[in-house]
Image (cartoon, rainbow, N blue to C red; front, top):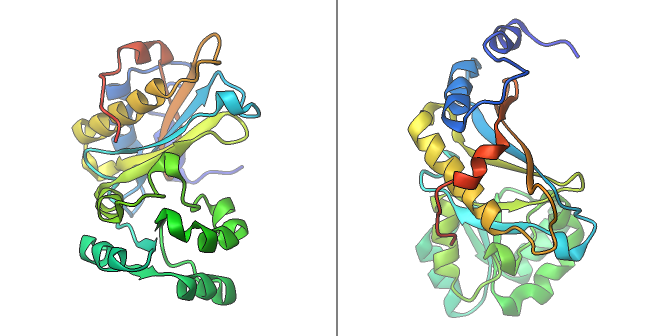
Length: 238
């Protein structure tokens, strides 16, 4: 794969053989973000678990203290009093069968987060093949199936992200924009890593966090020393 001049210049700043401490790696991210847009900073964590086994799944959600820097469009499946609660909390779209049909018939996907009350999961379940592959299917573990729709909408708007293993046992998550600066990125990074460490399955054996890499949208990967994660500050997960 051929990379552009800006990428090649960025790689010269990074020692690929070195394991950086998180603050230095995040500082490096801000320096390698050379695109004309505000690049997203992403974290990629490889875990020492096997996602094929139900007792080794790692999944949850956490509110980043500084948000993600992205405007989040929220869709809520609800009826009755919950409609007004969701709208007042800032949800862009609230409905029931009407929204389900719009998604099915028009392939409409102008939203980033889907929240549903438990009584609406029969309707939402019909969208499993559409929402599931995109990571948008509501789930109780992520707090997106709930009776407290107002809180769920508020948290989504505030920067709540979901973390989950993919088939290669890696978690991929955004932790903000390069323009955030090192301090805010560090706070978001610590919050995410604390949640992942806290979610360690009892069945996991050996080294839990095998590797961790941070990178901007268009920048090179920067390796972080996994031995440091034992001292990640404890953060209460929402």
